[in-house]
Image (cartoon, rainbow, N blue to C red; front, side, top):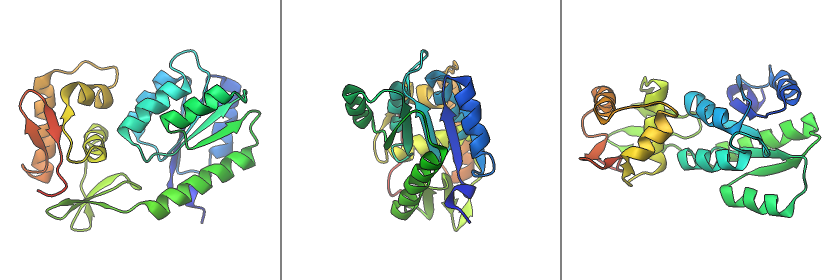
Length: 225
């Protein structure tokens, strides 16, 4: 069984013909395939679906692939991102490295080469990943992107999981309210009161001490609590 069968992929490409062609090629190879037509939509889809791998074009009119990748790496530094470009531009290559692009491929894309690159990155991530110990029997799996206690997955909504993932990625560090709003409620308006209610629901599931807060500033998860 291929390692890709249990993984989800997000394709971000503004050329619809190429986007549809890649989606068709990936269908049946991956567990789930998500698509977006620009970087802005891609970031929203990333936060909504939390895919294991991202494949993105670089030059797009509404938030390019490098800008989107920079935002994705803030949310989930370990998520592999493959960039596609028609230009062998040294400056673009340097920028791609700076924002954390894991692989850079030139168009026109050879699908076998792309799938091999994805599989290689996925295997490397799985081999290097281990569950993150959070204390009191809680673990976070960066590969499966689930919260676990006593070998059982905690049922969380997509927004709740996005919030927990954000705090785990910055473990022990205060995450300010504005970052939470930007990364969990992408393009949506949300009040501080609504965030407090949202966090109370998570605490009802995981216990009162799992998420620490600094009133008026933000929230964090400690490595041990």
